[in-house]
Length: 347
Image (tube, rainbow, N blue to C red; front, side, top):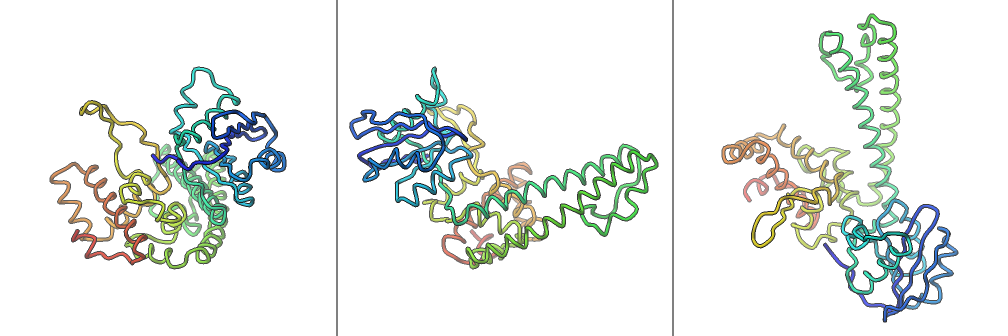
């Protein structure tokens, strides 16, 4: 966990919502100079902080609508801090909670150097990252339609499909195997939606890849050097990491990618596991998927995991291998070097 610890003359805590925002500004002595509830209007907010613009920091909890406020602060060279929502115990654990109290607590956390920070993703790459995440959402919906067809096929005890239903050229005769007209119509709807989504995904992937080449062509192709990492996995890792320099240590990167299990201890004793969801689940998915694909195609990877299975169980062995790959990706991006299979298994 990182805390914002820079000193300023004024500290602005904003409890931000879609239509309203409660703004609290404290001076360096902790005295309230502004405490107002206003509309989420950029001009109104700027007018409110303008008298203190000489040395003010704005802090807001990481909610879905923080983009415009971060961009406004960047345009006017105002220091902006994004707060990690899962670490805001001072706010979420209060006996009494409302927007006015929350904005004051945010300002006090900033002033006292106890404001837990999250990464404010830069505006230049932000829209493409969100578009890529939307592409992942659509891809999963397409998989759900394929699963529905397979489940319906099993319900009627029909022979299993030998080809992938996600491909349009494998759809011939699929609906016709069902005798009931209502069931056949349901399958036809599923197939039509799969066809439509595949066309959308194809155009979307082309657009994202074209944009990624303009953002960071070199890093994109470094990631493609990892066995098993193709177009989509490389894009996901590129946009979810953005800048590997924001992780001072490989341990920080592994924690962010959810590749290590958090452990709680008290008085030297084990006290369970918690906070497993703190981190980036998109990055975790990409690295785990890359590890599985490498394991499928590489005899060296299979031998490495089989040795681990003799000492640990199968799940633990795969977790260790995934963690090892995550560490390798960190050093690849940090040193700007292509993946080296020999070095990967020698270390």
